[in-house]
Image (cartoon, rainbow, N blue to C red; front, side, top):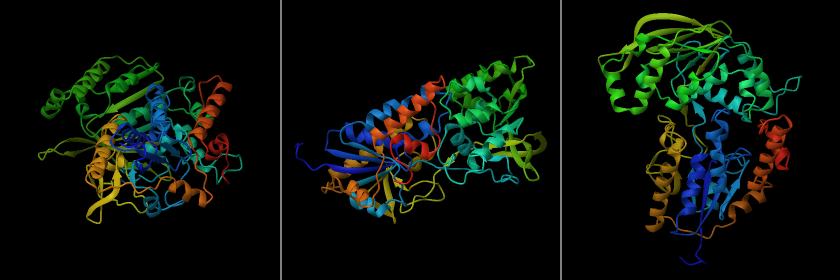
Length: 471
């Protein structure tokens, strides 16, 4: 490879794990020189590592340090606060680089499709998670109330502080995160990097009971055993579950026999079922073979109707007609994320993904010669953070194969994206800008006796970066 070879210029849309892993896969290969522009609509990188992993899971969140090292690699540039559709359109982006990798994740949620789902007090886990993680979309600067807080901030804060009983629909790690945040006391959360206003709101909550619902039995949960055990280690907490739910049918026995995680999870829950009630001030109720059929209430949630389920003759879950009601003021559906369309990018509404084959985007029924996809918008919201690395490697492998085959060619487009943005008066936030934000969050945390405090509002992030919302 000649030092004077024309670099392949690749734009990666999305600075979460999937996008940064794609940048990593591009930079570690030695087949050809590359320049990578990692673009994100937010002022900060790291996506769900920052805004999806619970703040009390610092070990997982610390992966941002590894991701940052990729952004600091020669030939990689971060373009924060740049929005596709506002600052430039996809056609312009494609014209300014040699290839585009879409890695913008799954920004919406799946719905339950039951009556009462739109009542005040019923919300999606992605919105609640974004709130307690300090996402600027949920902590907007505009439309403030007379007391200085934003309407969205106060709506979620009011829902949390006004609830004594909550229901979480779903049996994955996000459901556990939501339950744990609702149950933990303010002192237990104070050592996290939660935004100050979030901590203040959570300090006022009065939740004593959280009900977690699973349509199938305990053998079919998507919990990781480490997170499940963590729930059982919370002080002053009783775990309530039915021993009958832990009697496995044939299909559950088969699942436990084939899946070591399922076997460990069932074993953990069996130890909980053997515990006697301690009279703790907080309780988490695990309901299996249960599905919600109706959210109850007039203007706002007052409870939820549940139906007992079983496996039908066709192997699918079906209701038994046995109904019960649980009193609750908050219902959080945690049944999965869903990808959304990005203007100008092919999108399959039936799957919530960008259509592709091995990461090559399919546009108008044929492979698009310069478009690729990775991460949740490619495969759906499955796997753990590390899954995105192998996914990105597959996509970059397809891209490199297209270079080998002559379908993708470096056209000397170095610097064109920068020229396009500069010509429009758009100043993207680069890696040094992120590091100034990082330093500001650490300094703010230190002033409160904490390791760091998240800046939740865009205006705060831009000020810390050394720019302003008007720039």
